[in-house]
Image (cartoon, rainbow, N blue to C red; front, side, top):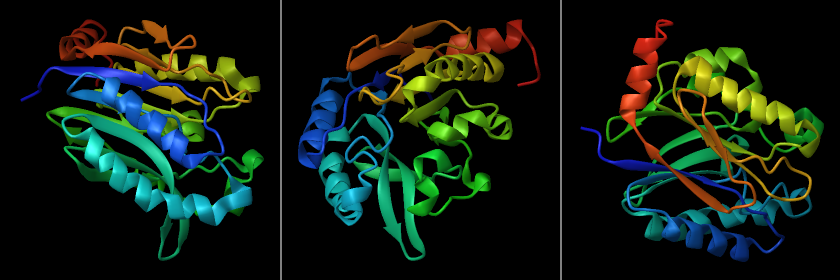
Length: 241
């Protein structure tokens, strides 16, 4: 049975102080309503700090342990640099009820940002829906938003989370794609982008009807999750979802 939920989009700048970034994220999680689904910007705790790559990797288990103490009845979605047996991945994790309940390695690395020189790619086939309290959720990590077959893999999701560090020069692309994804898949899209100078700063929440609300400089915005809006849109405009 689906409980009352709020959708939360975060937008904040990462600094070279990992601990300060973590404390800011925790403070925003603490501000969010109970039962919120919270989406943070991609690698928001460290940024792509290639000059201190091992330090960033080593920070991940510490950060997760600390986040587990604060998420509790809420759900937090973010990405971190994670070392696995075969190498390092940019991994989206989902924390719910003080546990990591889902993880997904970034499958589409952004070569213009040199990601392929530091990370291994995840598998497209691992991008799929998971469920929390009756809500089907999917994740696309930044550049993955550009691949239409991944939209199809998440068809039927109620909420799609987009943790991002999306380049400022392509800000309109981010707006257009996040809006289109919500309309095409008839679902909520919760997009969270870095507010650092070089990025789009276009975090926001888009409804199944395509109504968008952007952060506009706010670190946190909230939208009520209404499953009836999804059902209404899919019944009104039947495209087979």
